[in-house]
Length: 256
Length: 183
Image (cartoon, rainbow over all chains, first blue to last red):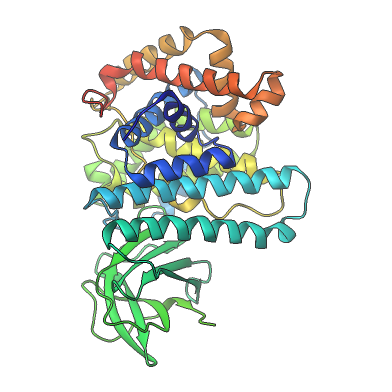
């Protein structure tokens, strides 16, 4: 993969989380094509940027902050879901992360222009969706040649996690799918999230995954039972998963 | 950190005692005198508690890891202040994000050394590069906004940010986990 000053420029801005929209798309494309040099550079420059914090005067927090933190330590969360098993996955994770950052920036800029966020959110969601879809398509195609049938479904949170969000990108032909989720709650160590594909109204196990430390998950299922998925759901199940769902539904799709 | 990962609350308390003033300083620098800095601090330590296993000592120094987490949360808040609603998309930001240095600088003396090197590296930057990096790092301004604020062409801002960060990387190279084997 060609490496240039232009890429350094994009990565430097990404390391500071200040990339503007058009550049973001270019960088996401570049990373999605696979560039270990830029991935390493991004990690390095994030670390290098913290040098700026070294000159900041330390401030001792009020005592109640410490007490409050220690009092609020919840149950264990073992963040094991970071999908780093293949190069493509790492690229996708990095690119997806950047993509999300970029959309956040776009979002902020729109607000700064004083426009009503709600009126913008549909457009923004559309842009995010198309960008994500393009990215997922690229990744799936990289993994599954000739996969030109990628579809997307949005998943919404249910009690007990109404704030959870997710999207599933899948290729019926290739029988593969990617779940991108956010705002998932911490689970006890003996529990995992399980993805279900609905076929003819029945849930079929599509694999288990963990959320990462910040509640996000990127999970690829190569377990899609057969073409014809109509809906998706995520439940909480005993670690390792079950053949049929028993736990609470956290995310569910809304097929049109 | 291994003890934090093993759910040792005393270990988290030690982590807090060692690093909270520096993290609070950064949160205050970004957010100003408000209760938000304290909220960020709480979020960061809860993140450290829950995500301890995502910290990779082979790649990093705990302080760098915590500073990255603090800065990104504080900047999110600065950006969301300008609106009633908050961006909800930050949760994936940490994926693929790792602290960058290889040496274990948990010991306080080593931490001070790291700090001195960082200060030296920042101090050696040309003024315009340092200014651009500070506006980005502490205020979260985009490159376009930095251009507007400083009355500088956008292309020049991009170059300053790139050159400045690359210089910091060069100076800190002995502490950074990669970059030795390039492409």
